[in-house]
Length: 464
Image 1 (cartoon, one colour):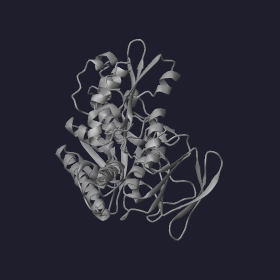
Image 2 (spheres, helix red, strand yellow):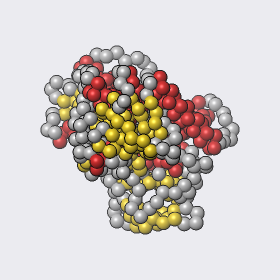
Image 3 (spheres, helix red, strand yellow):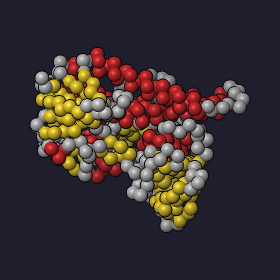
Image 4 (tube, one colour):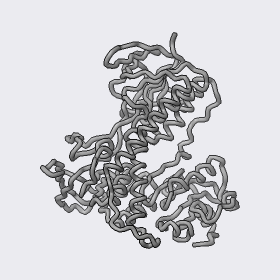
């Protein structure tokens, strides 16, 4: 008997879609080639990276705890123990995914899946090859790190997000190529652990998808922390030495400088895993390797959906993949579904200071011809931020005139990636700046700075 749904890939989008299908009573199977469930995000991405970032936060507090009246002589970082904790968190949640699938009566099938067309999926593993049939298929095969042409990742010197998470010691020096979320998060981790860190970005600014003011503030804070940042720059002539990596840095003013480091992290983006999965046997259409879908996540092949990092035109974020999975399953099950509003997708970067953003940047709003009014509030005016010892950064609200529609909210500061949640909810509920000005924010909290930022749109912030 055919399945109602076969999901290919067990990342956040894939396993969430499979569980939701089980909740709807659909006969569902999930195919995963890896031994562990959870995909890139859980195994070698979001979760292990944030574990290291949390430890970096704790370590930073210990190193600077004397200002709080706490004397901790000669604190020592046991990095193998840090790694063990990170691995333990990953293993716990991977087993949790397995339990959740069982609870939803989703059948797990181990092996490499290939689409054969007509609702058929071939699954091959070490012991058997079988062909499955389904009314619906979800492609959730994710992505992998892009590599600079001519280079190959290795466990010792040239690293991607996978290899750097398996280091057993903090490198003395680290060069990072790429200043997107992955690059800047690892810079934040290893600088605080004591490494000399250089970030090289070809584009004019770090975290280039963020509002320009956010990029400037992160770069300013990185430099203050001792991280060398070179934007508008190129890393060329990369080669391994006996003790590390050597390259030529060409700066934005054309000067060339030799650089050496113990490790090199390549963080120049991710490519979709759409090769060798049998798309040629279907009518699925591609755009530069990404799968084209409609608002319900349907591809050009009847009954075949795609979600997550393989999809053209959506951010490669775990929470986007999960929402796309919910939309796809609801659509195939005949349940109510609401397409993604791409202007209400939160983006989070877990550096110190942290970044959270949603909606249009100021430049994007103006480029659309909007009449824009901007409110800013600095964390220097927030009592909770001062108590935490992290009052760097600000909140920026981009609103339309004359009705006060919230077009975008951009945060850099303590727990910015948490504070943005209120802004996402406000935009989803179509609340205006005026409504949020009247919303009571608890004191003293970090998120009350967002209330001040809404007031600042009209020049009415109290503590700035």
